[in-house]
Amino acid sequence: MPSRAAPGRSKAPAKPQALSFGAIVLVPFPFTSHAASKQRPAVIVSSRAYNLERPDLIMMAVTSQLRPTAGLGEVWLRHWQAAGLLKPSAVKPVFATLELGLVIRRLGALTAEDQDALRLAIGQILG
Image 1 (cartoon, rainbow, N blue to C red):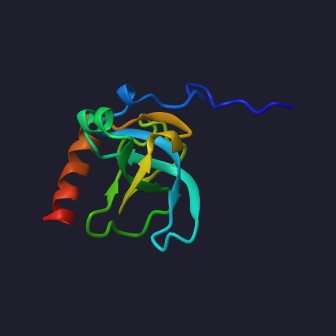
Image 2: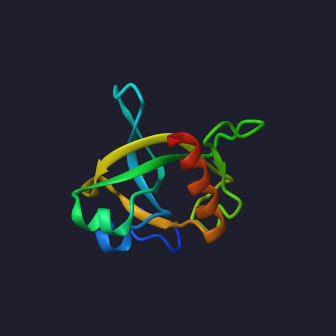
């Protein structure tokens, strides 16, 4: 039987004009060792202008494995359901650059409140 996308989720590949800071996408996110990757949600942290100009996207990993307290640069998403995620989630302080063609699909987008929290966390990480 053919698989079906969850309601509100498109299987069509993401288009660069649809991707800007805060977009949530499903990608094969690489492990930090680069030995393998895991299909998981990620949040785009590069700007729309960057994404239109370049063949790649800068993103951070999203996880549903929440620690008892958030670590440095980690953002617990307050509005994870509005972002198109299935479980309570956090953005991990792990960056990756992936080609646009590796995006499996767009899942949603962070709310303005969660985007603001992510910008603060990126400032903590990068200085």
